[in-house]
Amino acid sequence: MVKLRTKIFKGAERDAGNMALGDHLRELRNRLLICAVAVGILMIPAWFLYPWLVDFLNEPYCVALESSDPDANCKFLETNLLDPFALRLKIAGYGGIILAMPILLWQIWRFIAPGLYRRERRYALMFTVTSTLLFLLGGTIAYVTLSRAVDFLVSVASTDVEVRSGVANFVKLSLFMILAFGIGFQFPVLMVALQMVGVVTPQKLAEWRRPAIVVIAVTAAGITPSADPFSMFALMVPMYLFYELSIVIGRLLLRRRRKAEMAAASTEELV
Image 1 (cartoon, rainbow, N blue to C red):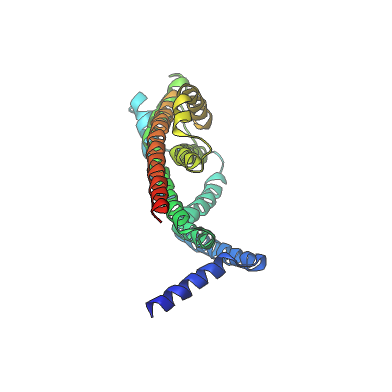
Image 2: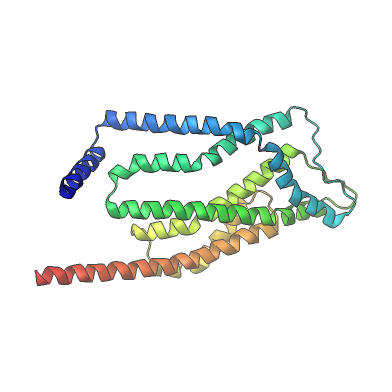
C-alpha cells in the first residue's frame, strides 16, 4: 500500500512537472487570481493600520527634532488637503501586499515547485526563508537609523529654518529607506547563489575584496534615499560583513560538494 501511494505521488509529481503550455498558463492564471484576491481582502485591515503607521513613523521624527530643539513641534505639517487620503490608499495597497506576503510566496512556491528536483526544492525554500528574514532585519535597521538620518537633514538646514515635514513625504522617505535596506541585505543571498551555480568562486571573491569595498560603498550611497553619511555607513558595513560571510559559506559549500563527489567516485569504484 505504501509503495502504491509512493508511485501515485511520483506519477502526479511527474505529470505536474511535464504539463503542457496551456496547462501552465491556466495554473499561472489561477495562482495570480488567488494572489489578487488575497491582496484585495487584506487591503481592508491595512486601511485601518494607517493611524498606527503614522504614529510609528512619527516617533523617530520627533526624536530627531527634539534632539536639536526640545520645544519643537513634531507633528507633521501637510499643506495639500488631498495628500493624506492618497497616502492612505497607497498604505492600504502596500499593507495588503505585505500582509498577503505569506500567501504570495506560497503561491509562487506551488507554481515553481513541480519543475524542481528535490535538492533544488530544498535550496529554494532555504533561500526564500533566508531572504525574508534578511529583508526584515534590513527594515528594522533602517527604522532604527531613521532618526539619525532626520537629525542630519535637519541640522543641514541651519538653526534659522524650522523644518516641518509633510506626512506623505516623510512616509515615502521612510518606506524607501526600509526598502533600500531590505534590498541591500539580500546581498549575501545573491553572492551565495552565484557561487552555487558556479558563476564565481570563493577564491575569486577573496581576490576581489578591495574593489568589492568600493562597489559596496558606491551602491550603499546610491540606494540610500536620505543620502546622509550615517545611513550610508549603516548599510555599507553590514553589506561588507555579508560579503565576507558569503565567502565563508561558499568555501563550506565547495568543501561539502567535493566530499560528496569523492564519496560518489569511491562508490562507483566499489561497484
